Structures are given as structure tokens and as C-alpha cells.
Image (cartoon, rainbow, N blue to C red; front, side, top):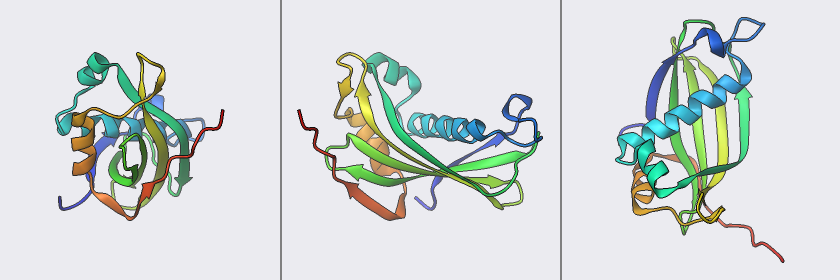
Length: 152
């Protein structure tokens, strides 16, 4: 892979706020959409998440807002893998959002784990998710995540 996965969006009316720029939660929404597009491109479409009753449980989103994005501007969102546990359950993703002129508009760092909708517990992801994660470009600071132990 020559670079991180990316896709381009256009800032729509519903994504703007009273300050006439892309609202804070729209940054995260674009990142989420790019993640599902990444999995679809790597053979694991949304219908497969539904069929297997599995999904991402997000524990934390950390957002850095660096530059305004305005109505009808295009924004390119990249996705890279910043961390993964040995069993594949826990992950850390890194998205960057770029203005149409290439200026970095923001960063979103997401920490989460795979969650079974059947058992309502964290779960080892199916092979299709594992294969997609293996195909993702890793960040320079990628690390193996050591899951925290839960005490009774």
C-alpha cells in the first residue's frame, strides 16, 4: 500500500454550524463513514457486520481541530491503524481530514474494540475484519495494545 486509505466528502448544509463551518461532530461522522468504506473496500461490507451481529464499540474519540472546513468544500479523510491488540479485539485508529487545498484541517484518534451484539461482550473479530485490519497502513507510532485486565 502506497499511502493510507482515503476518501473525499463534500461539506453539506447539515454538517455546518452557526459559525458557518463544519460542526465538531461532523468531523467524527466523516471519519466513521471512511472506516466503514475502508472495510467495504477490503471485502467486509456493512451487510456482513449486520449478518454477523458485530460492530465497533468506541471508547474514546480525541479530536484536534486545526482549520475551518466550509459549506460545499471538499474534505479528504485518511485512515491508518495506530494500534491493535494481539487478539485483534482492541484497536486504535487515526484519521486525518484535509481541506481541498491539502491543508490539514483536523485529526481524530479513536480507541475501541469489537463488540458482539449477540453476547453484548467484547469479541475476537471474524477473519474478514482481521484481514482488513492487516491491510491497513500503520502509523509511524503504531503499537501493540495491551488490554487492561478487568477485576471482579
